[in-house]
Structure formats: structure tokens, C-alpha cells
Image: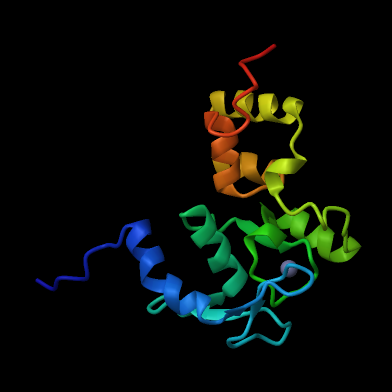
Length: 169
Ligand SMILES: [Zn+2]
């Protein structure tokens, strides 16, 4: 019987590629962008080889490293800075594909400059997120709805951030 490699934990996966990944990142530049210096596709998006899975979009990998977990394949990773080679998690959001398409069409720049995704939330948003989580909505879906990283969303929901907000007031 053939034995495959032991499946990697997310932690092992991240540690395995982190160094190689960040060796290809320059910045931040004056816009706060982390520019990809490795291979790029015809649209200017960075490509990064993760081994067996082949080359993937570098900004997507950056978001996965930031979140500590794979980005759900049904979701897009969208740039706020309109710089396709940027891999800064502060300039990226995980969103449903439809939102990304609409953004590409409208080139919405309103959130540029608000670097930290958590800063955009209001108390009302946080309560809404916690209610959604309590009713079983997936954290990735909540994160997408509130235009933030999975990590920031789960921290807000768990109360690690936004501690001052108590259950429904
Ligand atoms: Zn950027």
C-alpha cells in the first residue's frame, strides 16, 4: 500500500511557505502596498507556487496566511488599492465573487485609507455579526458580508476585540 505524505496542519503549511513567500514581497511603498516581486500573470496579479497545487494568486495566499486558514474557494479576495501586485492583507478583503465583479466594474475606492478592517465596524455591526454567528452563519460568510478578514471577524465575534460590546443592549 502506497503511503502519501502526512496531511499538513494549517500551521505547518503556513510555516512551510511563509519565508519563501515574503522573500518575494517588497514594501510597504508610499501607498502602504506590499508589492509582489515574483512572477505575475498577464493582469499583473502575483503568482506563487505552493508545490503540488501549482501556482496560485499571491494575494490570495497572503490572505490565507493572514487568516491562518485557506480562503474558501467560493470567495474572492479583492483589492481596495487597485494595485493587482499588492499582497498587503490590509488592502485586501475576502468577499463573495459577485461583490468582486461589481467592484471591478465600479472601481469603488471609498474604503482606501481605512487601513484596519476592524476600524470600519460600528457597535451595531458587531452585534449583528455576533447574532449571525449565534444563528449558525459561517464565519467566512460573515467576514464577507462585513468586508473584513476571517481573523478579524472571528475575533470580533468571539469578543477578543470589541470587548466593550455586551450581548444585545
Ligand atoms: Zn495595496
